[in-house]
Every structure is written in C-alpha cells, then in structure tokens.
Length: 290
Image 1 (cartoon, rainbow, N blue to C red):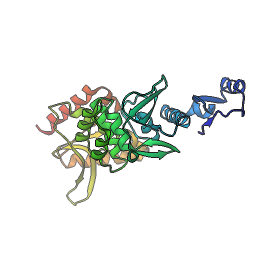
Image 2: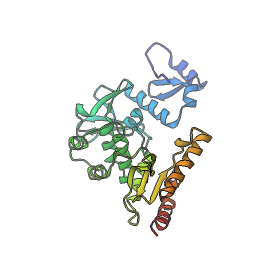
Image 3: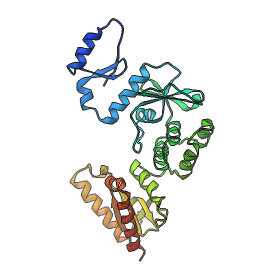
Image 4: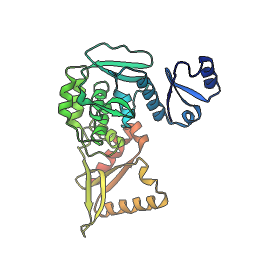
C-alpha cells in the first residue's frame, strides 16, 4: 500500500474529505492518505506500520522511528506491543513533545544505532529492542531482545553502553543477561520467560538435535530436559503443509518417544493462561523423571 502526502494545491480539503467519506481514501496520519480498500484488508500490524511511515514522512530529519514503531518497520516480533502511538526518538536528554498520537523520546542517539528502512530513518533492531526493554517488564524485554538476536549478531554491550543512565536500564541489562540466540520464535521466547518464574521447572536445553541408533537426526526440539522430557511450542506454522505436515510431525514425535522422551506440547492459548503451561510442564516432569 502506497502512502501519499497532502500537497498544497493538488486537491482541495473539501475534495479530500469527500474521498475519505466515500472510503476511497483513508487518513493514515496527519497529512498522509492511502487507499481505502487496501487499508480495509490490511492487518493490525500492517496498519500500525503504515501509520509509522506516515508520521515519519511529516517529521524533520533529526527524528528517527524508534521503540514499537521501529520494531514494526523492521517487522520485529514483540510480545503485546503497545501501538496506541507512533514512537520517534530525537538525540538529547529528557523531555520530548509527545501528543495523543505521537510519543517523542529525547535520548542519547548515536549514528551507530540508526539505519534506514522503507526510506525512513529508524533505530537498528538491537537499539530498538533495548529501547523497548527499558520501558516494559522483564517478560516483554526478554522477548524483544531475543527477536533482535534472531535478525543480526549485535554487540549488545556496546549498544547498551550508548544508552547511558536512564529509567528502565536495569530491566534491559537483566533481559540481556538472560537472552539466548537459540530461540526461534516469539512464542519460544515467551515460553522461556515464563519458565524462569517457576522454581520447580529446571532450565531447559534449547534446540538440541536428537539422533537415533544409526546416527540419523530425528528431531531438533524447542526445549528438552536431560534427554527425557521434550517441550514443543506449537505455533501452528509447522502444519501449514496440510495433512502431510501432520503425518510428518507425528512420525517425528514417535521417534522422540522411541528414544525415551516424554513429549509435551503447548500453544498460544496456554501461554496466555500461564498456569496451564506450568501444570503441563510439572506433569511432564513427574512422568519423565519418576
């Protein structure tokens, strides 16, 4: 979907209002318009990304898209992102000129932490994740940082040092210490974050390859505990191949059980109701280690 800026003289305000009223155009942000039909079919994530692009098109060169808005432009998965406003950052300290639709952050901003996406300046994935980590709880901070780790091999320590002293920096440091580059989805990151809160659940091994007695790899699992309990987050992506994918997954699970593993699986709904996952894992532990 292409965005168009309101240009003086190209169309009257009355004509624009008519196009919006008829649904031919939609006002994405102040001064930016897009196709009404394309907007209607766009996902919430895509609509927020377009809002961010529209806001940035009307900002000065010193402002860069940041926080949740930068994550949307990078298509960086986040846990429960706050997308009520578009976030921008300007080099400086304290203050900002936030409005109902735009949150402006004045923070130390190095050129090393800025890149370009879709023609606009935006914080890098690493800086984006650390900025978010300073404004949310530990679960969401860990998920943001692990999403960044899946996109690049950043020097988190150097980027963290450039942030300076700011509110939330302790949470960002803690999340950085706990983060792993081995998780492969936001669901796996959220699963890890929840497990860390439960003392009866030991730290799992991530992405272990299991081999059969002939040395063939039969599975690489999301989580496992001592080669006796396997935990798999079911994001449903693996089943998009239809019936054959379901058959393949069953054969894979049978092979894991043949190696002496008890297998437990969970879904997004279990993550949204964490006590379900906690009971599932505790029950699995009782079976696998009895």
